[in-house]
Image (cartoon, rainbow, N blue to C red):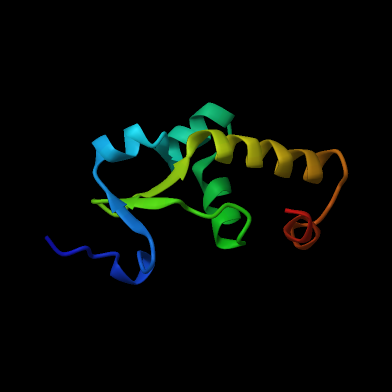
Length: 94
């Protein structure tokens, strides 16, 4: 089976759903629902380099380590809303 997302998966592990579950990896929608933000927010943070993806599913979905990502989202939220830092300043702090 060819992966149509080849340009995005360079250097990332491709995992089955079973493997992802063992490693506590979750899709964007699951993380967004748990943290109560929009998936587009996670997409933005990923594009900006604040949230690196940990792997890809066989279908090409981005996978994130659940606990690490939720902790990092909390830190980004704190830096943005409490300390009023810009994305560039947050990048330097993370």
